[in-house]
Picture (tube, each protein chain N blue to C red):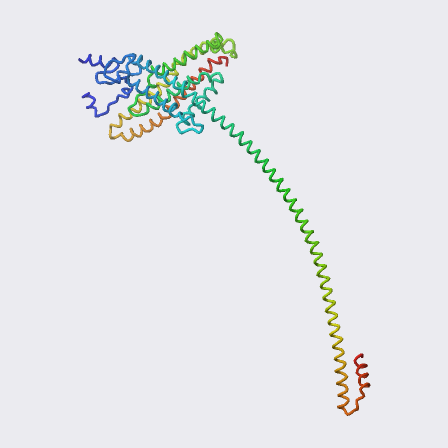
Length: 181
Length: 249
């Protein structure tokens, strides 16, 4: 019976199911491992060489192509951006010059108008001043006249009050002489 | 069985995890029998398909997360092949990618508890190692003709030393596939066996905290080892391929 169990389990296993020596060196099991190993290697080789590796290679190539294209596109866009910036700067400079020109023109125009207005105003002021001066002179002349008359009358009254006989003409000439002094 | 129980639960069978069992029934393991090895190899294929086919199905110029991981693998191995083998080596990129992806997924899937680790089996790594060796040697002769033997003849060495160096070079050339395959199997097997030993110690109450800490630490180390061994196997394949393409360096 014991020999039968050993027979059934194989040469490399004892009756209890434990290994006799190293299972690695059991010649009975080697053809089995070698056969299945070869099957496995062929299977993996076909999976790899027919499906997996070409697919990954294609993906990697596509990616590097995409990256190269994107870098080229980015370079182009960068150049375009630089051009646009240049154009913008040029436009800005032009606009600035134009603005300065307009400002100078406007300034000159305003100055001219201002000069005209100033002249007009000066003329008006001069006219008004002359008018006023004439009025003042008239008033002053009027005032002197009045003062002379008042002085004459007052002098006549004074003379009369002091008991003299006022000689109209004499008093008048005296007052005039006085007022001139 | 009774004896083992009497020992107090300390049962060490660190190599039982590598036993090849039929998936269905208890019959003998024939060369065609679907076994636990088959199952985990199939899971490795499914993982490959999930990452590289389903992951990249969007073909996005802006990749999804999974697709960018697949692209990472692609770029990593592609650059390795290009750097080591030169432009002509790129023709062999799918083969090298296959080797890398297979070892990578086998290694990491083996870190799932209760899983099986195909790359810990010397039969499997030997097929890989000798496969690379034979392919590279045939390729060397096809590409270079008899001048491929110049690989063993150091032209810049002193004339007296050349035959001696040639002998050493030939020996080291034939040792390559052995070291190439045993390095991978040994690393993965040792790591998994050590994990099992620590797990066995975890049954003892006294040392179980230490054992569990040990499992965590070794597991962390294994995470590194799995990636590094996949990388090492692949870059050595590239180096051997470079020797076949340019034997006169």
